[in-house]
Length: 123
Image 1: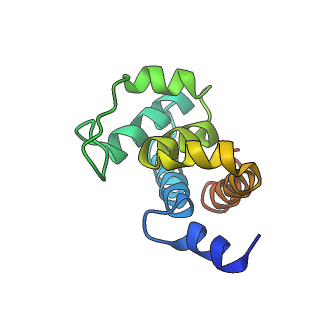
Image 2: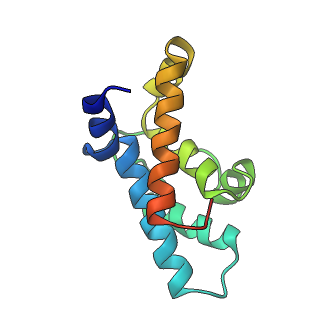
């Protein structure tokens, strides 16, 4: 993987790496603040924090599914939820997955690295 490409998608504003970092950090914060919450409740809280009104941060897309349905669809996994949110916010990645599968696999590795760093033990 090209070092510049890796740096940009890991640290760039709005990049998949920065989204994974945000989700990992906030998962850890919510988990520590509310140790009695189940993993599903923590993931739903993360969705609430990311989309307070059900709207995407960038653009006018609206989450059409309930947060409960999203968490179930993501198999109660922070990694799967991260991919769901990244695909929601970066619809162009679906095309990358089809046309450049190696680049997409590299992107998934960066997501795993960021989640392991900011939410250790969750994956």
